[in-house]
Image (cartoon, rainbow, N blue to C red):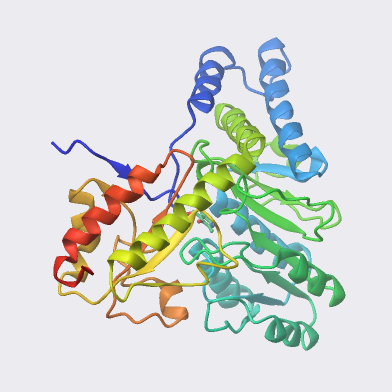
Length: 382
Ligand SMILES: Cc1ncc(COP(=O)(O)O)c(C=O)c1O
């Protein structure tokens, strides 16, 4: 049995905070009424949901009526995209080749089945969206929805959200941003940022899986994606995941309460790892804009060519280190990452995504560097 386990796959999912587990357990035990029931049990459950919605809305500076709980980031993205085309007269979507599959595959469906025209904005060599090309696309198309993620889950690049929102406003386009990797990690002031839809998944900031929300700007009225009962003010049928909602709100509150502390701590880990890798692994490089406009929780490392590239993640796992090759959806190797392919990363070099959380320490990074040094023994600098 291995004794040390280091979890560096926090962009895939995070460990739930004990305080989140506590409120969820309590809710599961005590508040089992159906929130749609009119008796006291139902009213108690409804009150918890509305309290959670209010708390989330106030942290984002929006109205509670603009927060709609979903089963997570995928459903939030699907809702924004499908419903915009159906209800807002969208005929053209601008997105990028490095979006999460929850956006890319949805857009492909809309192109195939609904005749939506899709433009993939050009990317700069460092993986950032080419804003000039975006403006050009906006200027030459009407009835457009822009769907661009706030931070990329594989290469960590951050989109200038304000700037893109301004461009969308200028050209009368709707704007959806997949904020799944930044929610709970950066403050968002959605009254000031002119965005129509943003998506959130609770499990990316120490909350539960299977719960998230879609913020829908009250000016951008869409109809349901999931039809059924009158839940979520007629916007999403299905009995609410009440303990998930309560856990999500708790995680969101905790994330905001200590955001600066966690930001500083995690950024230190990332910077330290970059330094250590440069010091000990020759020819190391970083995919994306790792040291500039970059999500502090993610570091995508391009390692020297080796004949056991395919085995690298497996070897790290054997040593007790959990990391990934791309998004959690890819099979564990960097081969097949549509994001790395889109930014033309050399496929001969193995890429590993390390992603950090408040639960990681400098010792975790040291341990990981030691193991990488062992794997790259022959190439390690003296
Ligand atoms: C950027 C991004 N969007 C969407 C998702 C999907 O979220 P969920 O797993 O909650 O459906 C993820 C999670 O992997 C993600 O990283």
